[in-house]
Length: 421
Ligand code: GLC
Image: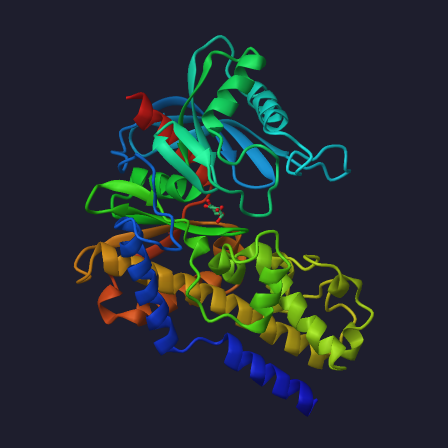
């Protein structure tokens, strides 16, 4: 018991971030933003979206395609021009069948096959007999040349479909729609989900100038004051971070070692795996003996962020079902450490961004967030807000953080409306 506690204390010293460390991270993040804006070498890609903030008056009926991971969503959205909107129809489809019948995310699938499947899904939602503009939320690092042309730089979130990197995803989508005789659907805008979240919140709240995803993946966009353009930072690739041996092990075994280090520390896709790597080490040192037989502990990525949430509230899960209360307390402590570090690192990047946008903290700002961690993980939103406020007393009352649910899909419709003007 004493030995296990020592291990937990050691984990605390590794995963807890001091105020000083967080201040460093925030400053390094701000410096990385400035370096990238000046076209220097930086972990941040700072990709321009060619979009300003919406006026709130955008109106009309639009199709939205939300492609951000292993599920795609197609929505038929009506914007009313007064900050209100309604979703008339929506359809969610996995790109990877759970029974193994198809997998459009694997390296054995081609770009054409993937987009043909997507076009087929769009065809099931479109209103017949009318021309309609489509906004596409494509939530992967993409170099844009115009609001409607985006070239995938590199897959993230473990997607591997062949032949999409370096290609124009709007051309791929347009060709696939044509093939399906869906020529009345016009892809006109392509955006990142962080930009979509920002647009959706700004449609009703003009103080919104930061949009972020805190879910399976992590990334942040903001309104660059010098150009009034929304910029997708691809902040998940930020890498000036105090990494633990578990982060290094996770990274080494990932699809792209060295890439997306912030995302690997904070995003839902990885938090369960970090917990598993810690637990494995404890099991192998003879600690946590009851976990020895647990099959999830041996399978990479078998532990999910949802499981972490259950551990935090200590409700029985498959993982802790047969455990003693001592072991449950330990798992809960580890889960809380991982959740808190994720919220702290994210808050530090928000503070870095705010220091660039408004160095003297004079104006009001709203940070719009979507994603399962922020929405559902117990204590996550509170830890994020508390950490951000603790950076500087002047932020209180000036900076708000809130959930913008489904912003990535709605944002595509708003982007299409702006583009169609
Ligand atoms: C990954 C993608 C990024 C996206 C984020 C959240 O970090 O690279 O483009 O915004 O996931 O979905």
